[in-house]
Image (cartoon, rainbow, N blue to C red; front, side, top):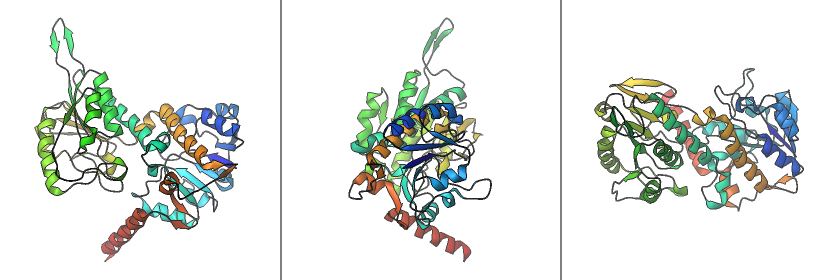
Length: 391
């Protein structure tokens, strides 16, 4: 079985799907690993390091795609500079393992199905204890939460910790984190390590203990409805509940020096949590880092990939933060991929047992069809919207 690690072509993407250590483990299992020349350079892993781990380095990327049994990527397939789409380079019946964004880009999933590719979407790994070591969303979100605080600290015109100096005592910065998922919890922990006073909000009351264990204050809002969706994700709430949460959020945003927002709903626009009025009410010089910028943003006025000034407040909308820490991001992602492959490959062949919850959740296309109802519904909605625009 031939496993290919291809070079990422998206601008700014520096991660690689496998690091040399993971390659060595697969080679020891009798698997053949091919690596596209330069695939690891952005993450500071040289071709020589891959060769030392037992990989074959290939200069010709098209052959790599077409001959591999399994292709490993970080970002979803896209069109190359030569006009060819990466999906069209995949051999029929081959396996693609990558982030796919299946609910955000169902047309890509349809294209993969038509190509008769078996697609394993790293976003769809179930959040269960059994699949924890394969959970790439969590491993990369942790990096984003960490980096978000460093970005905020660099932009804030104040110290983070309390300092006692000959000129007087400096009060610690106040950080308010919206969303206590993996990214939010890492942001809380990082802000606390830097000495800030931290508050956090989440519509899921079950995360209160996790927030408090990190030394932060949990901001509660009593909602008389279910707030947790399948897999432990936050669920979209009613308009009445949104109004109540915004009233509470506004009070704490106003007093914060730094606000970090992390709330996202798979396949939908990110919920708007910080309104224009809330931004205007903040202290001049305060900073907002919106980790949902690529999904439309949690904050009014956020622009993906840009730092903007509104009402004397700096709004930062970073995109793909894990790629800014490519060494550890690649190591963590490679561990996720390696664990998944070791789970699926038996006797030198990939085994897809759809009665297994990990396989059933993660495999989104197989044998020419799309396997997930939610993706089919997203396709139907996209087709309907396109039809309405044309009419």
